[in-house]
Image 1 (tube, helix red, strand yellow):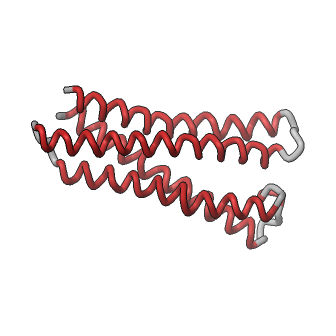
Image 2: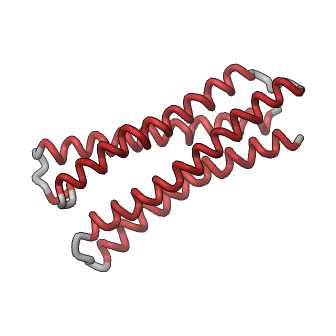
Length: 161
């Protein structure tokens, strides 16, 4: 019972954090900077949200670790979770997506932003650097959907069981 509770709690933190960041923190940061017409507000909002996302990634790793450990412990101690291999595989994919997004994609975004020294949105629409930033941003967003949707699936399995 405790192991299931720990797994559900970790999933709620992980999924809830992703929803809060993507649905509240990011839009709020950009909207407030724009409304107050803060010089270089988009850059500041991007830096602020980037730091929030970086810190949340550490929480994601911890939550993913708890989910994996509790699955394995439940498999060993019993009762074995229904569809254990599917759940463990999904949790591993969720962690891998988080790791790739934070280690590879976010690093490339930060490097590009540092090299630009201006907001990518201030560049002409056909500028290769703006296009690259948009591509990386889209990839980052898509990678965050993996743990969000996977977490919802794992929560469903836990509730159903």
